[in-house]
Length: 571
Image 1 (cartoon, rainbow, N blue to C red):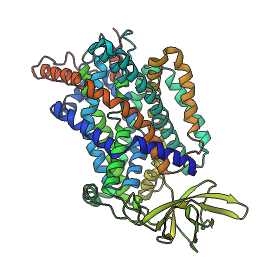
Image 2 (image 1 turned 90 degrees about the vertical axis):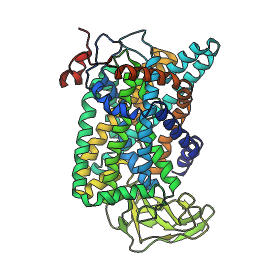
Image 3 (image 1 turned 30 degrees about the vertical axis):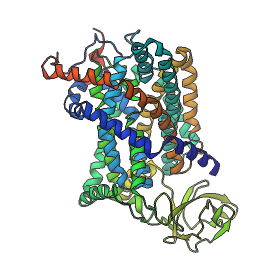
Image 4 (image 1 turned 135 degrees about the horizontal axis):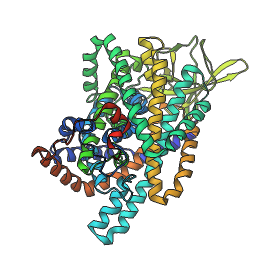
Protein backbone atom coordinates (compact mmCIF):
# COMPACT_ATOMS: atom_id res chain seq x y z
CA UNK A 1 0.00 0.00 0.00
CA UNK A 2 2.80 2.39 0.90
CA UNK A 3 5.02 2.19 -2.22
CA UNK A 4 2.17 2.72 -4.68
CA UNK A 5 0.88 5.70 -2.67
CA UNK A 6 4.34 7.25 -2.53
CA UNK A 7 4.80 6.96 -6.30
CA UNK A 8 1.45 8.63 -6.96
CA UNK A 9 2.18 11.40 -4.45
CA UNK A 10 5.63 12.13 -5.90
CA UNK A 11 4.36 12.48 -9.47
CA UNK A 12 1.36 14.54 -8.36
CA UNK A 13 3.56 16.93 -6.37
CA UNK A 14 5.54 17.76 -9.50
CA UNK A 15 2.46 18.36 -11.64
CA UNK A 16 0.31 20.23 -9.13
CA UNK A 17 1.18 23.11 -6.90
CA UNK A 18 -0.29 26.46 -5.97
CA UNK A 19 1.60 28.22 -8.77
CA UNK A 20 -0.27 26.30 -11.45
CA UNK A 21 -3.60 26.95 -9.76
CA UNK A 22 -2.84 30.67 -9.76
CA UNK A 23 -2.05 30.37 -13.46
CA UNK A 24 -5.41 28.70 -14.16
CA UNK A 25 -7.26 31.38 -12.18
CA UNK A 26 -5.29 34.08 -13.98
CA UNK A 27 -6.19 32.55 -17.34
CA UNK A 28 -9.86 32.57 -16.37
CA UNK A 29 -9.68 36.21 -15.27
CA UNK A 30 -7.89 37.12 -18.52
CA UNK A 31 -10.57 35.65 -20.79
CA UNK A 32 -13.41 36.86 -18.56
CA UNK A 33 -12.22 40.46 -18.90
CA UNK A 34 -11.15 40.10 -22.54
CA UNK A 35 -14.54 38.70 -23.58
CA UNK A 36 -16.49 41.31 -21.64
CA UNK A 37 -17.81 38.75 -19.11
CA UNK A 38 -18.87 36.13 -21.64
CA UNK A 39 -20.52 34.21 -18.79
CA UNK A 40 -23.53 36.48 -19.33
CA UNK A 41 -23.89 35.41 -22.97
CA UNK A 42 -23.46 31.76 -22.06
CA UNK A 43 -26.37 31.99 -19.61
CA UNK A 44 -28.66 34.12 -21.80
CA UNK A 45 -27.89 33.15 -25.41
CA UNK A 46 -26.59 29.64 -24.77
CA UNK A 47 -29.96 28.04 -23.86
CA UNK A 48 -31.53 29.19 -27.15
CA UNK A 49 -28.69 27.60 -29.11
CA UNK A 50 -28.98 24.38 -27.13
CA UNK A 51 -32.75 24.34 -27.69
CA UNK A 52 -32.05 23.98 -31.41
CA UNK A 53 -33.34 27.24 -32.88
CA UNK A 54 -30.05 27.65 -34.78
CA UNK A 55 -29.62 24.00 -35.83
CA UNK A 56 -29.08 23.54 -39.57
CA UNK A 57 -28.72 20.10 -41.18
CA UNK A 58 -26.62 21.61 -43.98
CA UNK A 59 -23.87 22.76 -41.61
CA UNK A 60 -20.74 20.59 -41.27
CA UNK A 61 -20.70 18.26 -38.28
CA UNK A 62 -22.15 15.03 -36.91
CA UNK A 63 -24.47 15.98 -34.00
CA UNK A 64 -26.64 18.93 -32.92
CA UNK A 65 -25.72 21.52 -30.28
CA UNK A 66 -27.72 19.75 -27.56
CA UNK A 67 -26.03 16.42 -28.22
CA UNK A 68 -22.61 18.07 -28.32
CA UNK A 69 -23.27 19.72 -24.96
CA UNK A 70 -24.61 16.44 -23.56
CA UNK A 71 -21.58 14.51 -24.83
CA UNK A 72 -19.24 17.06 -23.26
CA UNK A 73 -21.28 17.12 -20.04
CA UNK A 74 -21.20 13.33 -19.91
CA UNK A 75 -17.44 13.74 -19.60
CA UNK A 76 -17.71 16.41 -16.91
CA UNK A 77 -20.88 15.62 -14.95
CA UNK A 78 -19.57 12.37 -13.59
CA UNK A 79 -18.25 10.94 -10.37
CA UNK A 80 -16.20 14.08 -9.91
CA UNK A 81 -19.50 15.70 -8.94
CA UNK A 82 -20.22 13.02 -6.35
CA UNK A 83 -16.85 11.64 -5.30
CA UNK A 84 -14.70 14.64 -6.21
CA UNK A 85 -16.66 17.07 -4.06
CA UNK A 86 -16.49 14.62 -1.16
CA UNK A 87 -12.71 14.44 -1.64
CA UNK A 88 -12.43 18.24 -1.68
CA UNK A 89 -14.30 18.56 1.63
CA UNK A 90 -12.49 15.62 3.25
CA UNK A 91 -9.05 16.97 2.38
CA UNK A 92 -9.64 20.73 2.25
CA UNK A 93 -12.67 21.44 4.40
CA UNK A 94 -15.87 23.38 3.56
CA UNK A 95 -13.86 26.35 2.23
CA UNK A 96 -12.83 24.21 -0.74
CA UNK A 97 -16.35 24.64 -2.13
CA UNK A 98 -15.93 28.41 -2.43
CA UNK A 99 -12.86 27.91 -4.59
CA UNK A 100 -14.78 25.38 -6.67
CA UNK A 101 -17.31 28.14 -7.38
CA UNK A 102 -14.55 30.54 -8.39
CA UNK A 103 -13.12 28.02 -10.84
CA UNK A 104 -16.63 27.25 -12.11
CA UNK A 105 -17.33 30.91 -12.91
CA UNK A 106 -13.93 31.62 -14.46
CA UNK A 107 -14.01 28.26 -16.20
CA UNK A 108 -17.00 29.39 -18.25
CA UNK A 109 -14.78 31.93 -20.03
CA UNK A 110 -11.91 29.45 -20.44
CA UNK A 111 -14.25 26.84 -21.89
CA UNK A 112 -15.76 29.32 -24.35
CA UNK A 113 -12.27 30.28 -25.52
CA UNK A 114 -10.83 26.81 -25.99
CA UNK A 115 -13.93 25.46 -27.75
CA UNK A 116 -14.13 28.45 -30.11
CA UNK A 117 -10.45 27.94 -30.97
CA UNK A 118 -11.03 24.26 -31.72
CA UNK A 119 -14.03 25.06 -33.90
CA UNK A 120 -11.92 27.53 -35.90
CA UNK A 121 -9.34 24.86 -36.67
CA UNK A 122 -11.29 21.61 -36.70
CA UNK A 123 -10.60 19.16 -39.50
CA UNK A 124 -13.68 18.90 -41.74
CA UNK A 125 -12.18 16.82 -44.56
CA UNK A 126 -15.09 14.50 -43.80
CA UNK A 127 -17.90 17.02 -43.05
CA UNK A 128 -20.03 14.35 -41.36
CA UNK A 129 -17.21 13.17 -39.10
CA UNK A 130 -15.08 16.20 -38.14
CA UNK A 131 -12.05 16.04 -35.86
CA UNK A 132 -11.11 18.82 -33.48
CA UNK A 133 -9.36 19.74 -30.27
CA UNK A 134 -6.24 21.55 -29.09
CA UNK A 135 -4.01 19.24 -31.14
CA UNK A 136 -5.56 20.54 -34.36
CA UNK A 137 -5.29 24.13 -33.14
CA UNK A 138 -1.57 23.73 -32.44
CA UNK A 139 -0.97 21.88 -35.70
CA UNK A 140 -2.80 24.26 -38.04
CA UNK A 141 -2.56 27.63 -36.29
CA UNK A 142 1.21 27.76 -35.86
CA UNK A 143 1.72 26.70 -39.47
CA UNK A 144 -0.56 29.51 -40.65
CA UNK A 145 1.09 32.00 -38.32
CA UNK A 146 4.59 31.12 -39.52
CA UNK A 147 5.19 28.20 -41.91
CA UNK A 148 8.65 27.61 -40.46
CA UNK A 149 7.00 26.92 -37.07
CA UNK A 150 4.97 24.01 -38.41
CA UNK A 151 7.30 21.55 -36.68
CA UNK A 152 6.68 23.25 -33.33
CA UNK A 153 2.92 23.08 -33.78
CA UNK A 154 3.22 19.39 -34.58
CA UNK A 155 5.36 18.82 -31.49
CA UNK A 156 2.89 20.62 -29.21
CA UNK A 157 0.02 18.64 -30.75
CA UNK A 158 1.80 15.33 -30.16
CA UNK A 159 2.58 16.26 -26.55
CA UNK A 160 -1.05 17.21 -25.99
CA UNK A 161 -2.29 13.91 -27.45
CA UNK A 162 0.04 11.94 -25.19
CA UNK A 163 -1.26 13.92 -22.22
CA UNK A 164 -4.82 13.37 -23.45
CA UNK A 165 -4.28 9.62 -23.47
CA UNK A 166 -2.87 9.72 -19.93
CA UNK A 167 -5.83 11.75 -18.67
CA UNK A 168 -8.28 9.56 -20.56
CA UNK A 169 -6.82 6.47 -18.89
CA UNK A 170 -6.73 7.87 -15.34
CA UNK A 171 -9.31 10.54 -14.50
CA UNK A 172 -11.66 9.80 -17.38
CA UNK A 173 -11.66 6.04 -16.96
CA UNK A 174 -9.98 4.49 -13.93
CA UNK A 175 -11.22 7.09 -11.41
CA UNK A 176 -14.81 6.45 -12.53
CA UNK A 177 -14.48 2.65 -12.54
CA UNK A 178 -12.82 2.64 -9.10
CA UNK A 179 -15.58 4.72 -7.55
CA UNK A 180 -18.32 2.59 -9.08
CA UNK A 181 -16.72 -0.60 -7.78
CA UNK A 182 -16.13 0.97 -4.34
CA UNK A 183 -19.76 2.03 -3.90
CA UNK A 184 -21.19 -1.21 -5.28
CA UNK A 185 -18.95 -3.32 -3.05
CA UNK A 186 -19.73 -1.19 0.02
CA UNK A 187 -23.48 -1.64 -0.31
CA UNK A 188 -23.98 -4.95 -2.08
CA UNK A 189 -20.75 -6.85 -1.39
CA UNK A 190 -20.16 -7.46 -5.09
CA UNK A 191 -16.43 -7.98 -5.75
CA UNK A 192 -14.73 -5.18 -7.62
CA UNK A 193 -13.58 -7.40 -10.48
CA UNK A 194 -17.19 -8.31 -11.31
CA UNK A 195 -18.13 -4.62 -11.46
CA UNK A 196 -15.10 -4.01 -13.65
CA UNK A 197 -16.04 -6.77 -16.07
CA UNK A 198 -19.63 -5.53 -16.44
CA UNK A 199 -18.44 -1.94 -16.83
CA UNK A 200 -15.91 -2.85 -19.49
CA UNK A 201 -18.56 -4.76 -21.45
CA UNK A 202 -21.07 -1.89 -21.31
CA UNK A 203 -18.47 0.66 -22.32
CA UNK A 204 -17.33 -1.48 -25.24
CA UNK A 205 -20.91 -1.76 -26.49
CA UNK A 206 -21.33 2.02 -26.66
CA UNK A 207 -17.94 3.22 -27.90
CA UNK A 208 -18.02 0.94 -30.93
CA UNK A 209 -20.66 3.29 -32.40
CA UNK A 210 -18.44 6.40 -32.26
CA UNK A 211 -19.55 9.98 -31.56
CA UNK A 212 -23.01 9.55 -33.13
CA UNK A 213 -23.95 6.77 -30.72
CA UNK A 214 -22.24 8.53 -27.81
CA UNK A 215 -24.19 11.71 -28.62
CA UNK A 216 -27.51 9.86 -28.66
CA UNK A 217 -26.78 7.96 -25.44
CA UNK A 218 -25.54 11.11 -23.70
CA UNK A 219 -28.50 13.16 -24.95
CA UNK A 220 -30.83 10.79 -23.11
CA UNK A 221 -28.71 9.81 -20.12
CA UNK A 222 -27.30 13.18 -19.02
CA UNK A 223 -30.59 15.11 -18.59
CA UNK A 224 -32.17 12.17 -16.77
CA UNK A 225 -29.37 11.65 -14.29
CA UNK A 226 -28.85 15.36 -13.57
CA UNK A 227 -32.56 15.97 -12.90
CA UNK A 228 -32.80 12.85 -10.72
CA UNK A 229 -29.78 13.87 -8.66
CA UNK A 230 -31.01 17.44 -8.19
CA UNK A 231 -34.46 16.26 -7.09
CA UNK A 232 -32.90 14.15 -4.36
CA UNK A 233 -30.69 17.09 -3.42
CA UNK A 234 -33.75 19.32 -3.01
CA UNK A 235 -35.32 16.64 -0.80
CA UNK A 236 -32.29 16.50 1.53
CA UNK A 237 -32.04 20.28 1.72
CA UNK A 238 -35.75 20.58 2.45
CA UNK A 239 -35.29 18.31 5.47
CA UNK A 240 -32.33 20.42 6.61
CA UNK A 241 -33.55 23.82 5.45
CA UNK A 242 -32.66 25.52 8.73
CA UNK A 243 -28.99 24.59 8.25
CA UNK A 244 -28.58 25.97 4.73
CA UNK A 245 -27.78 29.63 5.61
CA UNK A 246 -25.19 28.48 8.15
CA UNK A 247 -23.63 26.13 5.60
CA UNK A 248 -23.12 28.91 3.07
CA UNK A 249 -21.60 31.07 5.82
CA UNK A 250 -19.29 28.17 6.77
CA UNK A 251 -18.16 27.72 3.16
CA UNK A 252 -17.33 31.40 2.71
CA UNK A 253 -15.69 31.79 6.14
CA UNK A 254 -13.51 28.70 5.78
CA UNK A 255 -12.34 29.80 2.34
CA UNK A 256 -10.37 32.58 4.04
CA UNK A 257 -9.71 31.23 7.54
CA UNK A 258 -8.34 27.85 8.72
CA UNK A 259 -10.90 25.12 9.44
CA UNK A 260 -10.64 23.64 12.92
CA UNK A 261 -10.33 19.88 13.34
CA UNK A 262 -13.56 18.14 14.26
CA UNK A 263 -14.32 14.42 14.37
CA UNK A 264 -13.25 12.71 11.16
CA UNK A 265 -11.93 16.00 9.75
CA UNK A 266 -8.35 16.68 10.88
CA UNK A 267 -8.37 20.38 10.11
CA UNK A 268 -7.42 22.44 7.11
CA UNK A 269 -5.59 25.60 6.15
CA UNK A 270 -6.71 28.26 3.70
CA UNK A 271 -4.07 26.89 1.34
CA UNK A 272 -5.45 23.34 1.53
CA UNK A 273 -9.00 24.59 0.89
CA UNK A 274 -7.71 26.56 -2.08
CA UNK A 275 -5.62 23.69 -3.45
CA UNK A 276 -8.17 20.88 -3.15
CA UNK A 277 -11.15 23.03 -4.15
CA UNK A 278 -9.39 24.30 -7.27
CA UNK A 279 -8.03 20.89 -8.23
CA UNK A 280 -11.33 19.08 -7.86
CA UNK A 281 -13.21 21.83 -9.74
CA UNK A 282 -10.77 21.75 -12.65
CA UNK A 283 -11.03 17.97 -12.70
CA UNK A 284 -14.83 18.15 -12.57
CA UNK A 285 -15.56 20.82 -15.19
CA UNK A 286 -12.37 20.31 -17.26
CA UNK A 287 -11.89 24.05 -17.92
CA UNK A 288 -8.42 24.53 -19.37
CA UNK A 289 -7.95 20.82 -19.84
CA UNK A 290 -8.75 20.80 -23.55
CA UNK A 291 -11.01 17.75 -23.49
CA UNK A 292 -14.46 19.27 -24.07
CA UNK A 293 -13.41 20.97 -27.34
CA UNK A 294 -13.01 17.49 -28.80
CA UNK A 295 -16.70 16.68 -28.22
CA UNK A 296 -17.92 20.13 -29.27
CA UNK A 297 -15.95 19.90 -32.52
CA UNK A 298 -18.47 17.30 -33.70
CA UNK A 299 -21.34 19.84 -33.54
CA UNK A 300 -23.18 20.81 -36.72
CA UNK A 301 -22.51 24.52 -37.09
CA UNK A 302 -20.69 26.99 -39.29
CA UNK A 303 -20.30 29.50 -36.43
CA UNK A 304 -17.30 28.61 -34.22
CA UNK A 305 -18.20 31.10 -31.47
CA UNK A 306 -21.76 29.78 -31.25
CA UNK A 307 -20.50 26.42 -30.04
CA UNK A 308 -18.13 28.26 -27.72
CA UNK A 309 -21.11 29.99 -26.10
CA UNK A 310 -22.79 26.60 -25.62
CA UNK A 311 -19.62 25.25 -24.03
CA UNK A 312 -19.68 28.09 -21.51
CA UNK A 313 -22.74 26.47 -19.94
CA UNK A 314 -20.77 23.37 -18.93
CA UNK A 315 -18.90 24.70 -15.86
CA UNK A 316 -22.08 26.40 -14.66
CA UNK A 317 -24.14 23.20 -14.81
CA UNK A 318 -21.33 20.98 -13.61
CA UNK A 319 -19.69 22.98 -10.83
CA UNK A 320 -22.00 25.78 -9.73
CA UNK A 321 -25.16 23.63 -9.79
CA UNK A 322 -24.45 19.90 -9.44
CA UNK A 323 -21.28 20.09 -7.32
CA UNK A 324 -22.93 22.59 -4.99
CA UNK A 325 -25.80 20.20 -4.31
CA UNK A 326 -23.35 17.44 -3.40
CA UNK A 327 -21.50 19.80 -1.06
CA UNK A 328 -24.69 20.92 0.65
CA UNK A 329 -25.76 17.30 1.17
CA UNK A 330 -22.44 16.37 2.79
CA UNK A 331 -22.24 19.48 4.97
CA UNK A 332 -25.91 19.45 6.01
CA UNK A 333 -25.77 15.86 7.21
CA UNK A 334 -22.50 16.31 9.13
CA UNK A 335 -20.98 13.15 7.67
CA UNK A 336 -17.71 14.97 6.92
CA UNK A 337 -16.86 15.68 10.59
CA UNK A 338 -18.77 12.85 12.28
CA UNK A 339 -17.57 11.15 15.45
CA UNK A 340 -15.93 7.69 15.48
CA UNK A 341 -17.87 4.99 13.66
CA UNK A 342 -16.64 2.23 16.00
CA UNK A 343 -15.35 2.58 19.58
CA UNK A 344 -12.45 0.58 21.00
CA UNK A 345 -13.01 -1.59 24.04
CA UNK A 346 -9.29 -1.14 24.70
CA UNK A 347 -7.32 1.29 22.54
CA UNK A 348 -4.10 -0.02 20.91
CA UNK A 349 -0.70 1.31 21.93
CA UNK A 350 1.88 2.92 19.63
CA UNK A 351 5.52 1.84 19.60
CA UNK A 352 8.45 3.73 18.12
CA UNK A 353 10.12 2.19 15.06
CA UNK A 354 12.69 3.25 12.47
CA UNK A 355 9.90 4.68 10.28
CA UNK A 356 8.19 6.58 13.11
CA UNK A 357 5.42 5.54 15.46
CA UNK A 358 3.30 2.51 14.68
CA UNK A 359 0.28 1.07 16.45
CA UNK A 360 0.40 -2.61 17.24
CA UNK A 361 -1.86 -4.95 15.32
CA UNK A 362 -5.33 -4.55 16.75
CA UNK A 363 -8.25 -6.96 17.04
CA UNK A 364 -11.10 -5.31 15.17
CA UNK A 365 -13.85 -4.08 17.54
CA UNK A 366 -17.22 -5.81 17.45
CA UNK A 367 -19.05 -5.12 14.20
CA UNK A 368 -19.26 -6.16 10.56
CA UNK A 369 -15.90 -6.31 8.77
CA UNK A 370 -14.62 -7.49 5.41
CA UNK A 371 -11.15 -8.67 4.50
CA UNK A 372 -9.17 -5.81 2.94
CA UNK A 373 -11.38 -3.05 4.33
CA UNK A 374 -9.59 0.26 5.02
CA UNK A 375 -10.13 2.07 8.33
CA UNK A 376 -8.67 5.25 9.82
CA UNK A 377 -7.45 6.53 13.17
CA UNK A 378 -7.44 10.22 14.02
CA UNK A 379 -4.52 10.90 16.36
CA UNK A 380 -2.98 13.90 18.09
CA UNK A 381 0.80 14.24 17.68
CA UNK A 382 3.23 16.86 16.37
CA UNK A 383 2.08 19.60 14.02
CA UNK A 384 0.72 18.41 10.67
CA UNK A 385 2.46 20.49 8.00
CA UNK A 386 -0.55 20.20 5.70
CA UNK A 387 -3.07 21.60 8.20
CA UNK A 388 -1.04 23.51 10.77
CA UNK A 389 -2.83 21.54 13.48
CA UNK A 390 -1.64 18.62 15.66
CA UNK A 391 -3.98 16.03 14.15
CA UNK A 392 -3.09 13.24 11.74
CA UNK A 393 -4.75 10.31 10.04
CA UNK A 394 -3.35 6.78 10.18
CA UNK A 395 -4.79 4.23 7.76
CA UNK A 396 -5.13 0.58 8.58
CA UNK A 397 -6.18 -2.49 6.66
CA UNK A 398 -8.51 -5.14 8.06
CA UNK A 399 -7.30 -8.69 7.48
CA UNK A 400 -9.11 -11.94 8.19
CA UNK A 401 -7.11 -14.31 10.40
CA UNK A 402 -7.86 -17.57 12.15
CA UNK A 403 -8.63 -15.74 15.40
CA UNK A 404 -10.85 -13.14 13.74
CA UNK A 405 -10.36 -9.80 12.02
CA UNK A 406 -7.16 -7.90 12.79
CA UNK A 407 -6.19 -4.34 11.80
CA UNK A 408 -2.63 -3.67 10.56
CA UNK A 409 -1.74 0.03 10.89
CA UNK A 410 0.55 2.20 8.77
CA UNK A 411 3.42 3.98 10.51
CA UNK A 412 3.29 7.72 11.25
CA UNK A 413 6.52 9.68 10.81
CA UNK A 414 6.35 12.12 13.75
CA UNK A 415 8.59 12.76 16.74
CA UNK A 416 5.81 12.88 19.35
CA UNK A 417 4.00 9.73 20.42
CA UNK A 418 0.49 9.86 18.91
CA UNK A 419 -2.66 9.72 21.03
CA UNK A 420 -5.93 8.39 19.64
CA UNK A 421 -8.63 11.07 19.59
CA UNK A 422 -12.15 10.24 20.83
CA UNK A 423 -11.31 6.59 21.57
CA UNK A 424 -12.50 5.07 18.30
CA UNK A 425 -11.81 4.50 14.63
CA UNK A 426 -13.44 5.63 11.43
CA UNK A 427 -14.55 3.57 8.49
CA UNK A 428 -12.92 5.01 5.38
CA UNK A 429 -15.69 6.34 3.19
CA UNK A 430 -13.85 7.45 0.07
CA UNK A 431 -15.27 9.67 -2.66
CA UNK A 432 -18.80 8.75 -3.71
CA UNK A 433 -19.22 6.41 -0.73
CA UNK A 434 -19.08 9.40 1.63
CA UNK A 435 -21.91 11.08 -0.30
CA UNK A 436 -23.90 7.86 -0.17
CA UNK A 437 -23.47 7.63 3.61
CA UNK A 438 -24.62 11.25 3.90
CA UNK A 439 -27.86 10.39 2.10
CA UNK A 440 -28.33 7.24 4.18
CA UNK A 441 -28.15 9.34 7.34
CA UNK A 442 -31.21 11.26 6.10
CA UNK A 443 -33.27 8.35 4.82
CA UNK A 444 -31.89 4.82 5.33
CA UNK A 445 -31.33 3.16 1.97
CA UNK A 446 -31.48 6.40 -0.02
CA UNK A 447 -27.73 6.61 -0.51
CA UNK A 448 -27.46 2.90 -1.12
CA UNK A 449 -29.74 3.01 -4.13
CA UNK A 450 -29.37 6.55 -5.45
CA UNK A 451 -25.59 6.79 -5.29
CA UNK A 452 -25.15 3.28 -6.64
CA UNK A 453 -27.43 4.04 -9.60
CA UNK A 454 -26.00 7.55 -10.05
CA UNK A 455 -22.44 6.24 -9.84
CA UNK A 456 -23.11 3.74 -12.59
CA UNK A 457 -24.91 6.27 -14.81
CA UNK A 458 -22.48 9.13 -14.20
CA UNK A 459 -19.48 6.86 -14.38
CA UNK A 460 -20.46 5.09 -17.59
CA UNK A 461 -21.32 8.37 -19.32
CA UNK A 462 -17.94 9.82 -18.36
CA UNK A 463 -16.00 6.71 -19.38
CA UNK A 464 -17.60 6.62 -22.84
CA UNK A 465 -17.01 10.34 -23.38
CA UNK A 466 -13.35 10.01 -22.47
CA UNK A 467 -13.04 6.97 -24.70
CA UNK A 468 -13.98 9.25 -27.59
CA UNK A 469 -11.47 11.88 -26.46
CA UNK A 470 -8.71 9.29 -26.29
CA UNK A 471 -9.77 7.88 -29.65
CA UNK A 472 -9.37 11.31 -31.24
CA UNK A 473 -5.88 11.54 -29.77
CA UNK A 474 -5.01 8.17 -31.26
CA UNK A 475 -6.42 9.17 -34.66
CA UNK A 476 -4.23 12.26 -34.68
CA UNK A 477 -1.12 10.31 -33.67
CA UNK A 478 -1.36 7.14 -35.75
CA UNK A 479 -4.58 7.30 -37.76
CA UNK A 480 -7.61 5.01 -37.78
CA UNK A 481 -5.48 1.86 -37.51
CA UNK A 482 -4.88 2.60 -33.84
CA UNK A 483 -8.54 2.97 -32.85
CA UNK A 484 -9.40 -0.69 -32.21
CA UNK A 485 -6.26 -1.44 -30.13
CA UNK A 486 -6.93 1.73 -28.13
CA UNK A 487 -10.51 0.70 -27.39
CA UNK A 488 -9.36 -2.75 -26.23
CA UNK A 489 -6.70 -1.28 -23.92
CA UNK A 490 -9.16 1.33 -22.66
CA UNK A 491 -11.73 -1.29 -21.66
CA UNK A 492 -8.92 -3.30 -20.06
CA UNK A 493 -7.99 -0.32 -17.87
CA UNK A 494 -11.64 -0.01 -16.82
CA UNK A 495 -11.37 -3.54 -15.48
CA UNK A 496 -7.89 -3.04 -13.98
CA UNK A 497 -9.00 -0.06 -11.88
CA UNK A 498 -11.44 -2.23 -9.93
CA UNK A 499 -8.86 -4.78 -8.73
CA UNK A 500 -7.94 -3.00 -5.48
CA UNK A 501 -4.67 -1.19 -6.23
CA UNK A 502 -6.19 2.16 -5.12
CA UNK A 503 -7.34 2.13 -1.50
CA UNK A 504 -7.52 5.60 0.08
CA UNK A 505 -8.87 9.06 -0.74
CA UNK A 506 -5.30 10.38 -0.98
CA UNK A 507 -4.42 7.72 -3.57
CA UNK A 508 -7.55 8.62 -5.49
CA UNK A 509 -6.78 12.34 -5.44
CA UNK A 510 -3.18 11.75 -6.54
CA UNK A 511 -4.15 9.41 -9.35
CA UNK A 512 -6.70 11.73 -10.95
CA UNK A 513 -4.40 14.69 -10.43
CA UNK A 514 -1.70 13.06 -12.54
CA UNK A 515 -3.86 12.72 -15.64
CA UNK A 516 -5.36 16.17 -15.18
CA UNK A 517 -2.03 17.85 -14.50
CA UNK A 518 -0.20 16.67 -17.59
CA UNK A 519 -3.11 17.69 -19.82
CA UNK A 520 -3.46 21.20 -18.38
CA UNK A 521 0.29 21.70 -18.76
CA UNK A 522 0.00 20.99 -22.47
CA UNK A 523 -3.27 22.83 -23.19
CA UNK A 524 -2.92 26.19 -21.46
CA UNK A 525 0.01 27.42 -23.60
CA UNK A 526 -2.16 26.76 -26.67
CA UNK A 527 -4.90 28.94 -25.16
CA UNK A 528 -2.44 31.74 -24.40
CA UNK A 529 -0.90 31.75 -27.87
CA UNK A 530 -4.10 31.55 -29.94
CA UNK A 531 -6.75 32.84 -27.55
CA UNK A 532 -6.80 36.18 -29.36
CA UNK A 533 -8.30 34.46 -32.41
CA UNK A 534 -11.12 33.00 -30.32
CA UNK A 535 -11.81 36.41 -28.77
CA UNK A 536 -11.92 38.01 -32.22
CA UNK A 537 -14.40 35.41 -33.49
CA UNK A 538 -16.52 35.70 -30.34
CA UNK A 539 -16.75 39.50 -30.48
CA UNK A 540 -17.66 39.40 -34.17
CA UNK A 541 -20.39 36.87 -33.41
CA UNK A 542 -21.82 38.91 -30.54
CA UNK A 543 -21.74 42.05 -32.70
CA UNK A 544 -23.87 40.33 -35.33
CA UNK A 545 -26.15 38.96 -32.62
CA UNK A 546 -26.71 42.45 -31.20
CA UNK A 547 -27.42 43.85 -34.67
CA UNK A 548 -30.16 41.30 -35.23
CA UNK A 549 -28.25 39.47 -37.96
CA UNK A 550 -28.33 36.25 -35.95
CA UNK A 551 -32.07 35.78 -35.52
CA UNK A 552 -33.40 32.21 -35.36
CA UNK A 553 -34.23 30.91 -38.79
CA UNK A 554 -36.86 28.45 -37.56
CA UNK A 555 -38.90 27.51 -34.47
CA UNK A 556 -37.24 25.13 -32.01
CA UNK A 557 -37.57 21.45 -32.93
CA UNK A 558 -39.60 18.99 -30.89
CA UNK A 559 -37.94 17.57 -27.80
CA UNK A 560 -37.97 14.13 -29.40
CA UNK A 561 -36.12 15.37 -32.49
CA UNK A 562 -33.70 17.36 -30.33
CA UNK A 563 -32.81 14.35 -28.19
CA UNK A 564 -32.44 11.99 -31.15
CA UNK A 565 -30.65 14.47 -33.40
CA UNK A 566 -33.26 14.20 -36.16
CA UNK A 567 -33.40 17.99 -36.42
CA UNK A 568 -29.95 18.01 -38.04
CA UNK A 569 -30.29 14.90 -40.17
CA UNK A 570 -29.90 15.64 -43.87
CA UNK A 571 -33.22 16.17 -45.53
